[in-house]
Length: 96
Image 1 (tube, rainbow, N blue to C red):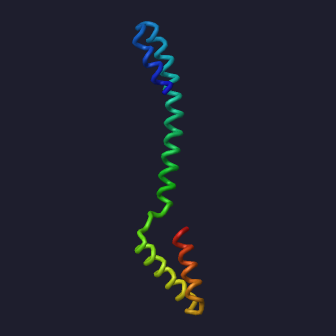
Image 2 (image 1 turned 30 degrees about the horizontal axis):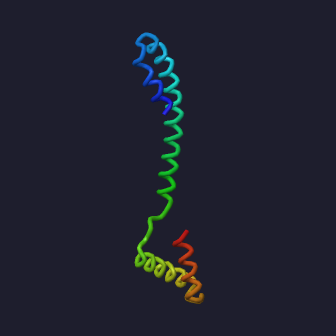
Image 3 (image 1 turned 135 degrees about the horizontal axis):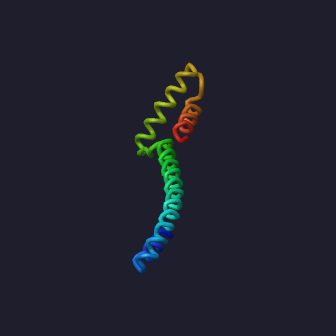
């Protein structure tokens, strides 16, 4: 927003504005460079967070995912674990 205010002052006086605009452009560039890099970092961070987060599942898809995971957990334990414990562990794995 600070870069927009000097832009409004430029048309007021041509010669001083040219000199000031060169200085302001340099300042604006450094400010915009900082803002852009921080914006890129923020955008990059946001993209990373969304890529790590699992998409929301429908109720049916969630149930089927937990069911399959619980099955593999029980199978891994040679069917010796309590099925409810396997289900709870599967829900923890799916939820994060």
